Length: 636
Image (cartoon, rainbow, N blue to C red; front, side):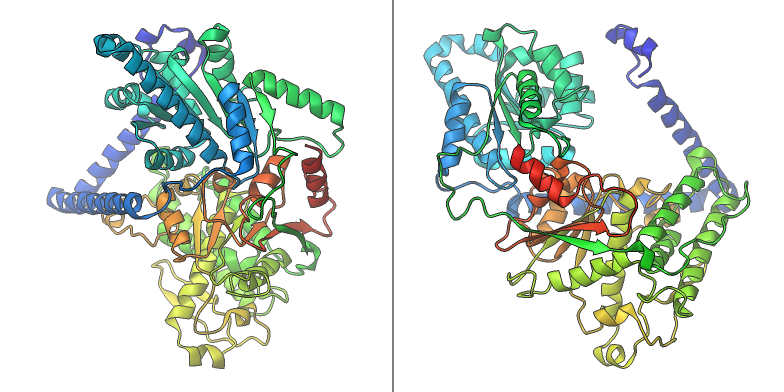
């Protein structure tokens, strides 16, 4: 929203920001032009057939997702009920939160959400007692001054997770406010009538600004801020507290409960006690709450305080003695200008993980990429792009086939170390995990890396399933040597290599069963998973790499051991309750102390391992080394 729109009174303001309005207009114009072009080329009757097929397919997928979502709510344990008693340190925290505003600082997996649930139960009980004391004659007045419990979260994934958990453990109405909830009158009515509102910070701020009759801090009994370390600077957490909480008189403010595993997002290794005291005092002031950590007077029991074993995995990019440059891009004008950044991403991917992963991913892009109609990419430019991706696939495979891709069969040393580590880590009862069904997460910095690694490991597993054991045992040919043509057909190459990284994975069953979770997977390239015509759109299936996946489905598959490895960006790093992992890998190292605490906190199984990848020969200093992260954590 530009400055002029901000200054316009809300009642006269356009329902959409100008940038969103312009984008919507361009999208609609492109869609109409596409339909008209299809009708001119194939006739109206053919257009109706394709349109109906696309709509039917979309409805079928939607119904399948709804059925799956319903089954997930019924059967999976995302919203599981908590049974048994609180542990001593949780009771300690709960007692403090009963009497005052409190920030609960506990490690990942130590039950911060459970503490919040017990506190919410107490506030709901108090509310019911007040209503009973008021008597039936004041029912109308009570309804007019309905109060809420507001549970703020930093992401939609966390909103879904906490809604499920609260619904399973509370006897009250729980509503979710995220994404477009504030734009729907029906959703606003549900929020206004709810006892507990789970809201993303952006939607909560929108409701507070524009719909005070739906949500007002003065009508909130308890304000819970999950991952409250974000309440700094211009973050929406800080804005909500500054503009709507602190201006209220103290007696009119809600109780505040903050939850965090890392109260400071980014502090240097040289921070001393005095500076730390200043930072934490400022944080407490913003939150209007006191920070409580694990009580020193309580001795941890056998279920608490066992942290993952931490290790550094060193790799040396200087050992990658092969050319990692992609083929030259087509001349200016032959490709749409929006594609340059995307191809640059592909080049960065090749430099990081090597030829093998990039070749497999480029081959997948040929199948799934769509024309960028909204920015007027012409059919010729789009065809040139697909031709270039085919060239990339075939050229990288040729280098591997000819033995010009280094000693690791096209992998960088970093990628080689990762695959070797994972092949051991997922092995039941292996050296790295004594569980019968170990599961783990690989955290990466960029979405394209997560998707490409997922694509590669799925590709390897599928090839092992398609080949019989005898064929694999008699051949040392790398399974990744595949050439593509523009129609997407695959031709296996029978070349035998004396040294192949693929040999490490031969056998009747490839042990890595991978999944991926990133934000907006379909936006890495324009437009993935959204093909240009109705026929292609109707052929999109669930096996496509670039698709928006449901968090519930991903976690269910991991918990049921349908998968044992998750490629993820920071969407899982924080808060999302994935299975307690046997191992966690920080593939791109660590940037902040928050990242270190959050990633390590996912490794909660007995004898779990935490691995940090470090470029041994890099001249660039690491943003945060493992030893420095450990030092800072101890100081905090």
